[in-house]
Figure (cartoon, rainbow, N blue to C red):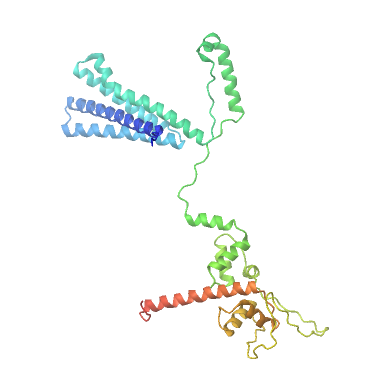
Length: 353
């Protein structure tokens, strides 16, 4: 089995190697020239060596700042101007060094060529990076028309007029998209979660919060949801969870009919109900379910059994809601037990497995 080499990776490695070679050669040549010139004017050897190192370091930093500015879409005029200044100093020192050696014009060209070559290659690289960055931002800069050399030679005046008209149309049509602001970085993960949570339906957010914190009351859930940008009050929470107490109104003018227990969904009436069943009149529906479940054997009592017992006292309840309340009560009991075990371990009175 044969594999095709990744040409893009190979090209990137080759480009990096070539740029490293050119930069190293230019830095070494500039440092050597500065060291030689400094020694010629009587500078101590250590200071002359330090001057060369400082020059090379500043030159590298200006190149890096210019490259970073181009990639970020910022103005690179300052770093590029500093790079040009360092390159000019390097070329001048190389020319002075060539005169000291008496090599004439060939020596001047030889000593100055690494710095000039690095400057040219860096400028071309900046142009490519600038074009890539502008394309990523959606900018469409104007392109030179492809009239060809013969067209420019035979109809130069007309080509210039067409080029000017094209430039005016490009500027006035808004084809070049203005630079987009930089995307925010380093956002806190809690801010992202808060933004996503706030975009939910309020009822769904209430249900999620209630399932995650079964031990919280309606007021506590409303306060917690407010921190996520969801403004609800305790009554809203109770209504969404189906735990709001529904008041009953009795009219004195009309005699109240005999209460006929209505069985809940899935419930069956049992005339032989236990006479010692707790009375749930006056309790909320949630509390009535919990009290009846504990009386009938605990929070694992089947929902149908609880619904039947509540229906016999005139509190018809849906079995689906009973299962929801039992699940919430079991989670709350489990959380309380874990907290008690943790407190016992912390105080040294608990059992260590």
